[in-house]
Image: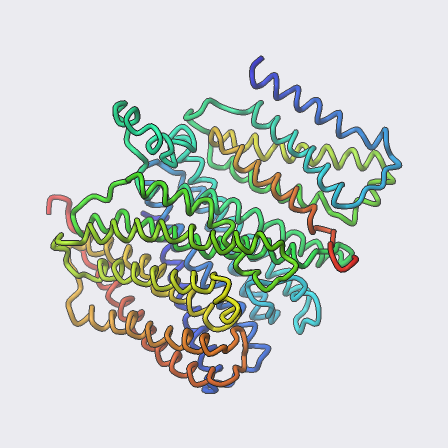
Length: 148
Length: 477
């Protein structure tokens, strides 16, 4: 099975996971858990982007302008993980699923664009994006300690 | 060359403006120049972020050019990044000059939001400005890293991993290790992307909080991310400029700076440890996990010591008995290596936990980073500028000019820096508009030193313009 096929399978599984709010629309997760689940969806989108777009190592890459979406998409993804919007989305499954699809799409764009510029770059920029998504769980819309 | 000069001239211009601001701040602390406290903290915010950005822009211009010499890069991407830098710098200036933002470059949460004396839009402009600078920085990092990955066929080859672990097979295959400046560029790019990701995350969280105060932020989390990005960004300015040593010293000494196993391994140390050394900024945060405090101390040593030792030792071996002429270019590089060692040693002392108990947030901290930036990064940048100009014009500066520049920048620099160290050791706190004794006395001495630095910088500027106006030496000459 080649990488592209695996990539489409990963993308399909991730897209199915994005539909969970239709099934479990009563779930009220703490923000930090919600961030981590979003990070998981983004990891699926990012992996799919690498596998589907990936080129052989050392191959001639594309235009440097691919770097712009590769760097802007993770920023938009962090804005899409706006913590105070989570309670709204938990009551509106359609919007919640749409948010998931946006996150997966942005993660896909990040790594696909990076790989389009240079083979291997998607892993590094995608890794930095997943780091942002996971790190968000520790403090973006969340406070720990002092009983809060 | 166009990209390199655009970046270096822009960086040095910002540096010159921030130097004037810095002199005003020290004169104010000495009681020689009346600046009200609100304006002082606004100007200190501008000076801090401006100087780091200036050195980063100039350093990136140099690094971009050095990589472009080996692997062709798209100039349009560099110009796009430059546009991000320009708009970002403009937004920061607007935030400070018109909005009087004064939460310093660290903008530690919740400082920019609680009890402020400036409007909310100023905080927004500041955050957007810093985010745009970070985006420009990450764009260059991604461009360099992608080009290196393409050229070397992967990270392992770019970092010399196969060269170190399978050396016989590597050499038998007729391969060559990555050049030292490529090792530097790879490390700067990777760590720059990681540090930039932290900076963007905390920046976005603060923008979200600004727009919607219901978005809570964990202060310790924000401090970790802010320093992870800030320390890494500031530290990487040195490693961008260090790449110039590997190319310029061979020009000065007519010898080659080879990659070696110790050099590659030293750069791996920098790659891994620069991004976690920042924990040394949080020693006083007792709620941090104790283990990361130890990681911070160990990483501070491992990030800096190996690469300094190997690079400077290699540089000195190149210079030793090479018959190198003491031109402005070679002088700057030699003095820059001294500044790198002195500033780095002072940083490591402060990162040593028993010493940090006394030195934390005293003037010792600006002492080390002013040494590092003014007598390290800046000198490498100026060294590169003058080596390029001397090579192009086929002539060097006379002894009088060299003495004026040397006494101003190195001598004045010492008079400027020593008061920071002495006052820091005496426990004078940093970031105070009005310092307790003996702060004001030493601030006065430092102001005189900074004025001498200004004289040296102006002399270097005039000499640089003189060399640049000379007709280029033809290749046959």
